[in-house]
Length: 178
Image (cartoon, rainbow, N blue to C red; front, side):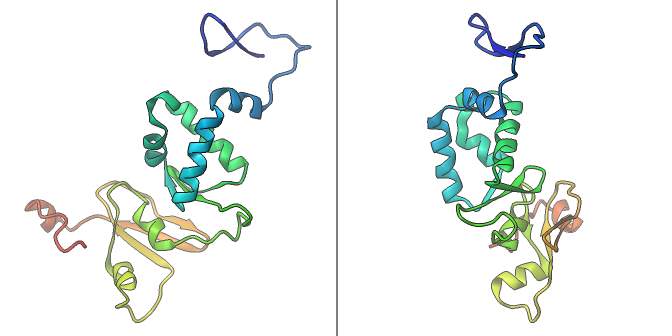
């Protein structure tokens, strides 16, 4: 049974009482996150169609999300409430109110640009964004230094590509990026 200790000020495990009811997920969630924090999240959800864990951590500041587990609990809560759709670890699509989670529109170029912290649209994907491609693909490439596994979301494939070594040797990354 979870109980709040007045001395500790944190949630801890007390003795197991078989007759006591465990608090529901919503009760624990409300205890961890106050209404003002939830209002901040609603503002964030309205402003950004794509949400990364890094952006969420920056938005909530240190006083709101004191550890990584609290942040994971917050994201898991909103996924269960169908406000967020997981694209990949650390990247979520925000579902607008009144729209089904399965039919919520997602901008694939915005998703590709947020797959990693340093993602940059590349090759045919960049041509499509600039309107210079003659065909439309369901495959989206992005340059990144981070190791990222290929991801599929709603039939769209996202693949990471390492920057050419010739650019890395002369420290000329970012050349030609608009």
